Length: 103
Image 1 (spheres, helix red, strand yellow):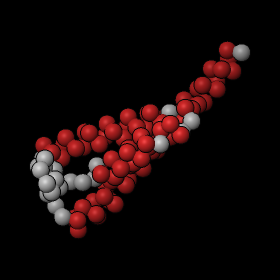
Image 2 (cartoon, one colour):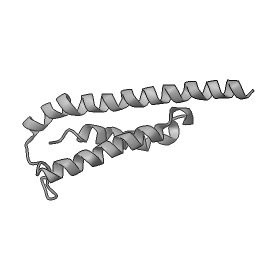
Image 3 (cartoon, helix red, strand yellow):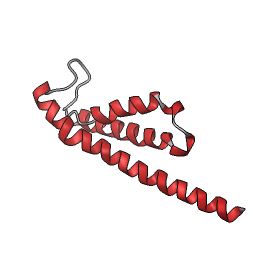
Image 4 (cartoon, one colour):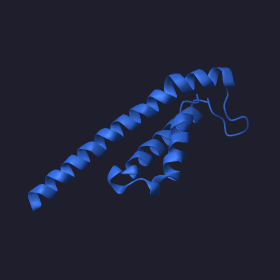
């Protein structure tokens, strides 16, 4: 119901700090993964009536939302960071390998 709020908050933070992160870390990839997941989950939650387009927006109260944020939102965000870190590691290694072959 509100699990997308954790990656949404993270996406806001990484988008705000994107110019301070070196280009080799491909922060754009992370932002695309985070925002894509947030958009997909928001649409899914709206279609199932868990999120409504009028206040208070969420159909459950804080006691139901907080455990879901911890149980689902945090692991989902950590999984996105894990996949992104593997992607960046592979890109850096391939870049070094290709630069080595070219010289």
